[in-house]
Structure formats: structure tokens, C-alpha cells
Image (cartoon, rainbow, N blue to C red):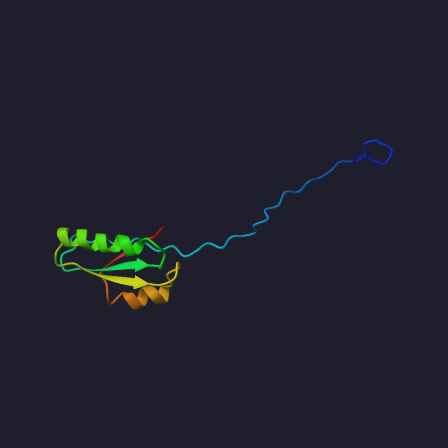
Length: 103
């Protein structure tokens, strides 16, 4: 430390702290097993209303129908964050899920 007369006395101790604090770990879910075939499957297409998906999903559905004519699609809408409650409510309606982001 420098004193008023310019002489040095003692030591300075600096402590570095993380301004973010402690970050709580989120629950990790295992990946669902892949479908072996899309024939007859119900595919949920999630859209959070961002521009662009209204163009993408019709083309996606058309290409899917060419590859697997018996597969069906349903557009699911909601906010950016999908809650556990959302997922549980969609589970009886779909066999697979696509989350697309517009723009």
C-alpha cells in the first residue's frame, strides 16, 4: 500500500470473486430412443410463432409425405420455453417431435 508520503508499507490482498454466484444445475433428461420407421407415426411440429416456420413446416410436411406417406403432422404452438406440462399434454397426440426455430 502506498502511503500519503509515497512510501510503501504492508501488502495488498486482492480477492477475486465470481459475480455470477452459484449456478444451480438443471435436471438432465436422457434422450428418447429413435424411431426405426416413420410409417403411420404422428409427428408434432412445434412453432413458437417466430416468422419463417410458417414457410418451413409446409415444405417439411410435403417432404415427409414423400418419404413416409402414412405419417401425419400436427403443428403445436406455444412460447419459446416448452414446459413439462406442455410435453405431457402433447404426449398422447404424437409419436415424435420437431422443434423448429424461425427467422
